[in-house]
Length: 241
Ligand code: PGA
Image 1: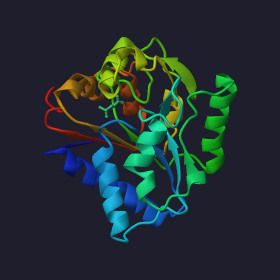
Image 2: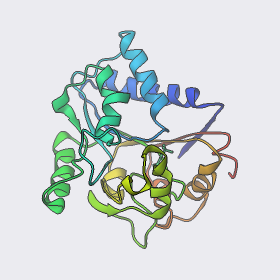
Image 3: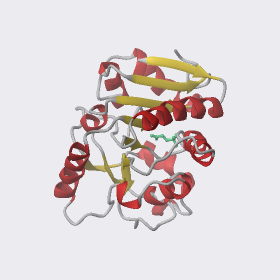
């Protein structure tokens, strides 16, 4: 694991964006695995800036997002589909047909999830996966559990995750209780991973991910086994290392 500690979120975003842009410039049809949440927003901002400056094009890039809420439509202002369009896709030249955000309301979740994994494999696999980390060590919506998860699946969210997501919804009862998420195995199949975290609330999860034993009690700890991971964090998130 390469662990880099930065002064602020802008520096983190610039460093993460540089890796992604270099990849896309060396492989125009790169496959990007993308994440929602606050952590990757400065990265997406920097990517948009570089796109506007003519330094990168996404016209042949394909993206696969980690997860999506169940029970709200893609058009909902809180869907991850909306988030990705507002924070990135609407501002670059990516083709809508090359954008994949899981359908949060598939008719048959099992078949849909298997097909999502198959479409990643068929595209050639993810070149770079962007990740945040939950306060409980989750990656995607893979919550602490007894076993590491495999492929994409429908997950029941934990109270801790529902609590963290509450800020985005008007009423607590509106916060989705289920999501479709890539499994841990689908995530670590990526050739390169950038995990971004900021703030004291993430410090314990960062400590457990890097220094703890590899255990599904901290799903992110699986990244210790991956040979091409960048951990980009600020001083607060690094404060327990
Ligand atoms: P955040 O979420 O980037 O909004 O902190 C990360 C996560 O829960 O995976």
